[in-house]
Length: 212
Image 1 (cartoon, rainbow, N blue to C red):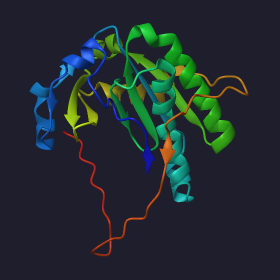
Image 2 (image 1 turned 90 degrees about the vertical axis):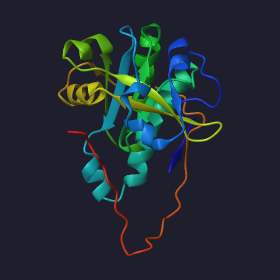
Image 3 (image 1 turned 45 degrees about the horizontal axis):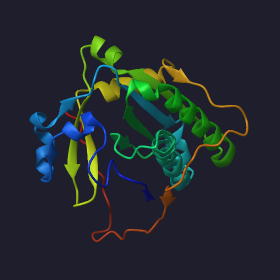
């Protein structure tokens, strides 16, 4: 599993993030009243591995996970922030950030794409999608904070905007191109450790539920 700072380990420093409701009971993730809309001036940085299914079938799931987690590490380190909301999707990631960080985020995405290509022999596509463009489609991006422990918070997203942003990226829109050869992201704090989990009843099943 890949580890990195999860949203924030203390009080959030960003006014918007600090204003987010915090809930400790996981069932509260389904309560839309716990979510707040991202500011119109923010954007979503999204990225994923092209052909990840085939790479995983070829036994490269650890490498795919490392590539996906590197996106979050690269962006948070470049921005000097640990409180930005993000989602790790296994073969990619999504990070919400304010407009003031646009250029730094663009450069970090470009650098991590180059690193994934050069060091992991995978193709990472990336895009930056403005929140205002998402809302123009009648969708939204709302965020909440789930407190998993005294020191760790996870970001939760709702509104359908993240899925739309990912689809736009896969369609080639809002694309960020890789940095020139030799560019490298700051991946300080990223660690991937793997411990096999034994199946107690012969098989392990993962459930992915998408609201209709």
